Length: 148
Image (tube, rainbow, N blue to C red; front, side, top):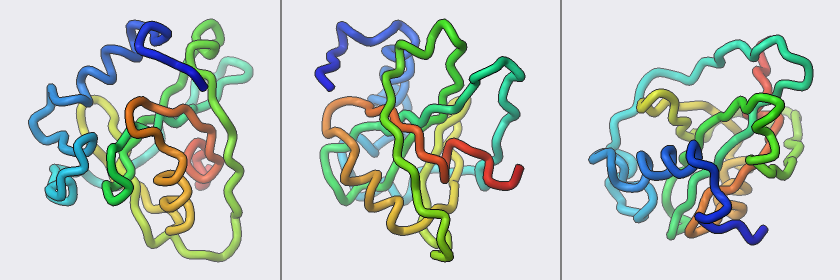
């Protein structure tokens, strides 16, 4: 992908602006070790998808300059006319029997929630994220409410 800030929608720029320093608790992008001490809320719960045909959740994987930083992301539910603004790649993750013993952090409404996932998925997300911009992914283990 050769996306630049000029290619981003206003909504994407606003979301990135909030994440890049406007929130005093946000140290993720710099790789600061105090990432583990940021204020996090209860376990993530999914909001129902709109009943429009073809509606999906897309994961916005936020950037990090260091591979040691935790995984921070957001789930986006673009309308049919907005989906082209989020060119995403799919990662179908093994359902297997591996336990969900690792965590990712999901931002929603200026709060950060924890979601348990497999350690291999966290490793893949760290390997896939860009150091300087968001990446859009569809990952079944995160984008689909596995309990529904």
